[in-house]
Image 1 (tube, rainbow, N blue to C red):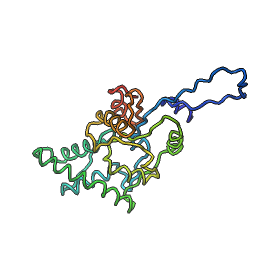
Image 2 (spheres, helix red, strand yellow):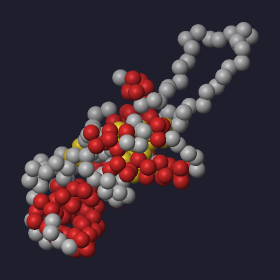
Image 3 (cartoon, rainbow, N blue to C red):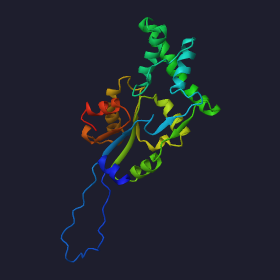
Length: 233
């Protein structure tokens, strides 16, 4: 299944002839340079999943917003799926009776929640309150892609950048294998993240890349939309 998935991502593995070539009869051999692909991974429910002791996804966000606001914050029926952390925090505050705050007060409260979140998550992972597990087949796929010439792997996620090493590390994934990332801390609107990733790629590697050579891998319609609106996959 792995070669089929790589082909679907536009990654072509080298093919070797089953019979040795008679070089005396062969003409010039054209060596094609593999096309560069920037593969951007979502994190939650794509690379990893949460398995918190509470059984409630988004536990660190709820705790961080509770801490920042000084009042109990409940998720209710709200879905966090496909949303950026800034979007989730804003919706949580609004759903818990804080939506009428003045813009400056709301921005300050949100900033305090963002500042608290990485430490809340790290402490919860350390004491077993929060748990993240790697999804099946991910280790093999990341390794295979890492060995493919012309492939650059990055992240495109609604998580704050500072939270990603914590989540991934807890699930046994080295954050350092990803060359770059576009995060919720870069933009609250997920549809803004592909151009941000492209700009980071070009700044880090010093070469352009077309949107059509960028592949976003995620688990929600929002992941697909943030790619297709820019001509990526």
